[in-house]
Image (cartoon, rainbow, N blue to C red; front, side, top):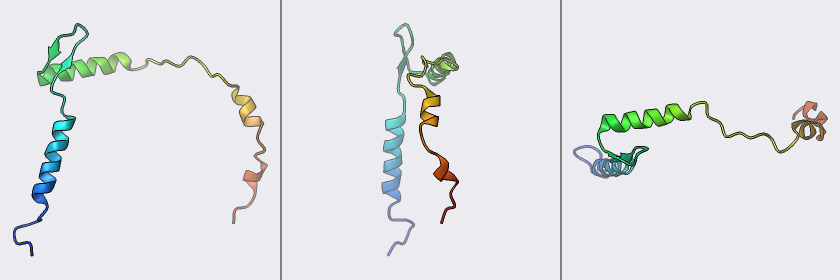
Length: 83
């Protein structure tokens, strides 16, 4: 019988702590190779990298003809009643 709350509280707290430590970025490197450990500097570094990637696409074009794919299939069966 549990008297003082959930018997798994310690277990869940330990698992949350482990997950937090695993997901925490201790330090990062800027473009010049300098190690950054300060929270604000890490946040600025990540935000700058994110902003530089916004709108950047590596799309070089389709290697297949989309019209051939769409017209090569008989889609008439899609209009049939569903039961």
